[in-house]
Amino acid sequence: MNQVRARAGLAPLAAGLSQTALRTQLMHERITELAGEGVRWFDLQRYGVLTNQAGIDQLKQRDPSFTGFRADRDRLLPLIQIDIDLGRLRQNPNY
Image 1 (cartoon, rainbow, N blue to C red):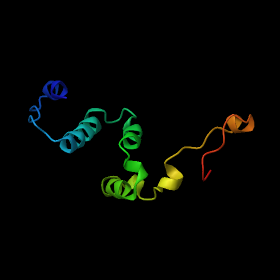
Image 2: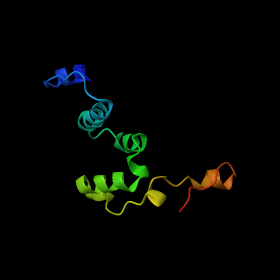
Image 3: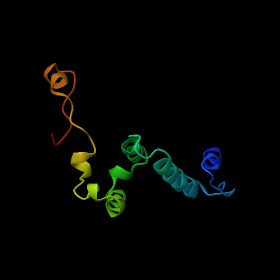
Image 4: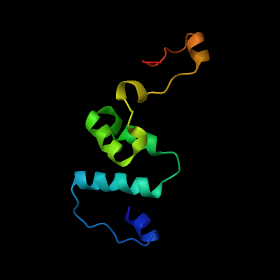
């Protein structure tokens, strides 16, 4: 992470960060480094932000597009109809 920060002209991270502090910093680094590259949704899924209401509420404060987000409906995308028709898959809930 410090190599990427050095390339960007930023100071290195302090040694001895706790696991929680390092994870928080890593999430921030990925947002700033990969902005506009289409990986944010996958990061939010990986970090478990979309699975609990507290995480969703935190997102709503910074990103108004999550105002109407419901974890039970919006976390999974609909599957394409041909896979359902062929009996390969069952549609995700709420679609």
